[in-house]
Image 1: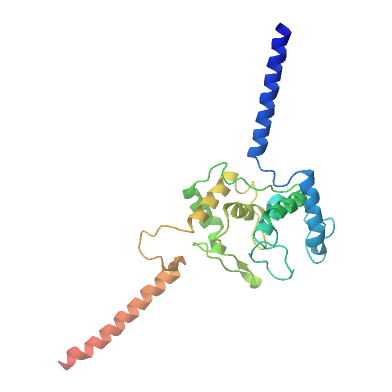
Image 2: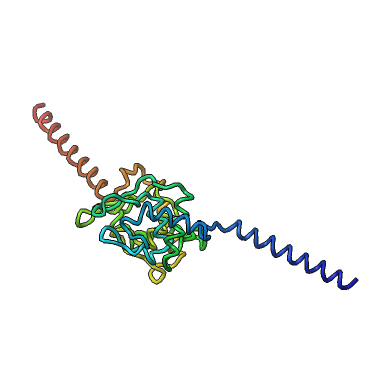
Length: 249
């Protein structure tokens, strides 16, 4: 009798552990990190990426090595449509993705398998803080992307892209991987919470509050100063127009 009870308890514990394991697997998306996903990604890579990045991802004179760039870089470049690109001498720009979501997952898994690199960030853990994000954005990002996130011109004909429309994950991936002329902000520079705080602030810029009235395009003090200058010029002309009439009377 005692042995039967022990067996039943053991079976119950085994069933519980199995259920928890399955639930955990379902709650955490694999993004194609299984062997089948890596194999599918390699097949897609050979046909669509190897010409520039090499058959083994080691790079060519047409494209850089992808060894060690990590899942975050591959996911950012593919989901924003920056890759594949047909002109290696031109700065890639955002456009509709060339691959379906499951194909992107497979390609990301393959590139991640080439060497350790930044993983796809979790933008919800730890939670970001909007106020902190605003301070960090103005300190680290506004000089290139503008205070309103509208982007701007850089040296050598390059540009800092408009941030409106980027997803939260893409924003975090860009911070961690530094695409194009953008610097890399690694964990030694910005913590995960600080990255998520910037992500929250960038999303806030999509629809910010305007307590002072008209937004004037949200391009900052240049527009505000121009409006003030035009107002002063109009006032000066009005004064010159009124003055002769008073003398005539």
